[in-house]
Image 1 (cartoon, rainbow, N blue to C red):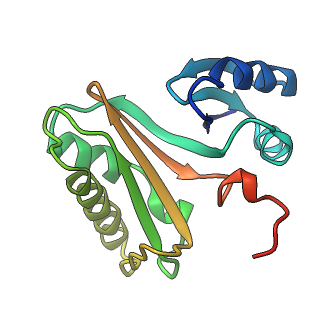
Image 2 (cartoon, rainbow, N blue to C red):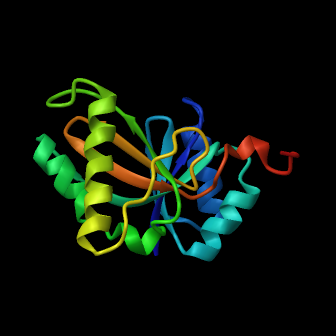
Length: 166
């Protein structure tokens, strides 16, 4: 089982939670502007294809307490990034949330970027490039009330664009 977060407009959390339960998701928990849930990869793909309420789905790869810039860096560094994407791919980081030691979302994104590239270097592979506009791999990070969540984009572009021409 993998842990996911399905984003939705505020006010739709209850309806999205009900929809996810109908699909067969487990550990469904409503949150602000979305729902956390657990599912197999097969079920997550099915949810991504058929959900009517979620706007985006991310795979949660880290969730825990974070009280300092050092803890933020270490949390991102402990993730085995080379197993998630190749150094030949570009990546970007969307960081949301401020408070405590984070005065600016760019600071949080920079700390995570440093941890990702350091992890690649320490594993003996070249550093991947950062691409802000159209990255191959997108990392989402949220910091709220001393809790850090690091996720990777699972559904690609916003789900309202499914089936549309590019």
